[in-house]
Image (tube, rainbow, N blue to C red; front, top):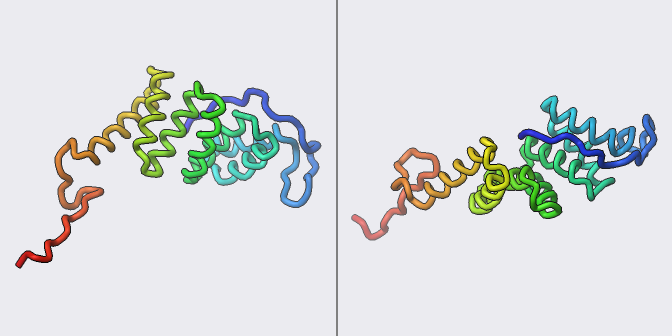
Length: 171
């Protein structure tokens, strides 16, 4: 997932270089945020989740921190947690197209394509020129259409194919 730059949220909760206790990273909330984003950019999402979760605890109202945490959770395969984090950002600011997009793609990864379509459609409506948003919405709508049988029955061997139950009365 792509990201946005930090908008200046957070402060120095712990002096630079000091550990605020066992297991607490050195630096302040802003330092945790920057290091977490850097870890995410360097393809270390699980490590980023650790720092960004700590920053989100310290600054629960920060949309930038919560969004970065959601991206890290998504990239780490923690789709349910990512959905909750994106939902928190979107509920705080319903006009945040990226949070709507994140909510939608997280829901799709969890198999909830109805919710996915709703939030991806909102993201596309807010940013109609965004190809990532459009592609995700097309994929979700195609999945919904396939599940509804719009393309005919699934053939044996196709992903999602379930063999019809055997008729116990048949010879």
